[in-house]
Length: 403
Image (cartoon, rainbow, N blue to C red; front, side, top):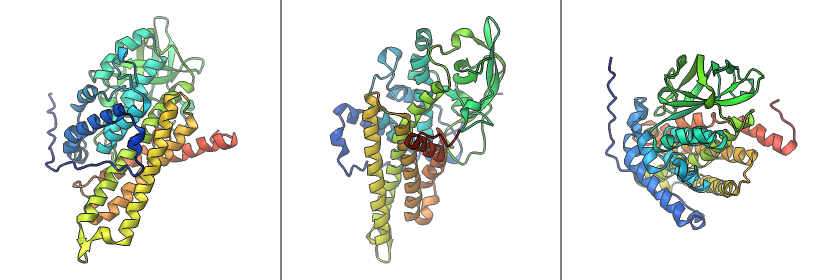
């Protein structure tokens, strides 16, 4: 039976977003950085902003955007050009994530997974044959990927995973399950982390259509409603031996991917915070109460001043982290600090800006409630708020409180 594609309604409301830059951070960016940011901002205004509220209200993943993300260069921007990537630096990557998440966290999740959790491990840990086979198609959006680490009983403790594979001579036999996997219901490939018979963690590329491999969709989400989320189920899946990522094993391999993804999140959530702040500021200047704009009241000004301060601090944190990434010097703990701080900042701004709009703030006419719900997922995935606190605690004291 054919299932009709859902009809996505376009909003006629103009996207008036302007980026706050209180500390003239643009002076620290190159002309190429600004050009890339402008191109992605225009893409978001044209392709995401008009449809995102309807997609979220009706829990629709706009899968037509996958190829468009490829066309605009959002997939694998730091991957070398010879593999279909953009060959860009990490500040460019951060700016791309910022602009896309300004549109919606679910859209940034789609792009972040493809770039940092699928393309990155294939490029960094894969064979040359794997790079040539998969990366160009992933970069163009011809192929969509997902990343399988989290399990039903092992979230913050990925080393406890039970998904495993056995060497059967001509192939590997994979069994287990993963959950909370972005892109999984539509993914063409999955980069899956599983233990071999000696208990060593390896990455394996599992392809759609392999017998025993299924991707049930997760329903009933209140967050990331425009993103597709599901499970990965492996029931005696025969995986060709050439699909094993050969160049890195152990828990450090998937954690290296998470560092890349967390870096993108640290930039991305600034976009969501900016969108909330700019919307609240415009509303406060237009909304009249007691005979004057509510922007004239002290408590409104306090909220706006605190929002701009926190956004500016997050911008500086992300930019310096980008400089460190470009030099190959960014540490896991530094990335954890930026992810934890910036997500918490964005979530607080989403909540405070919603209050400025009063009752209107809970409607789909404005983005605050959507951003707030989305950020409840972002503060949890890729390491929870508290886990990042403990990563920093270990860095400070040398003692791992979570072991």
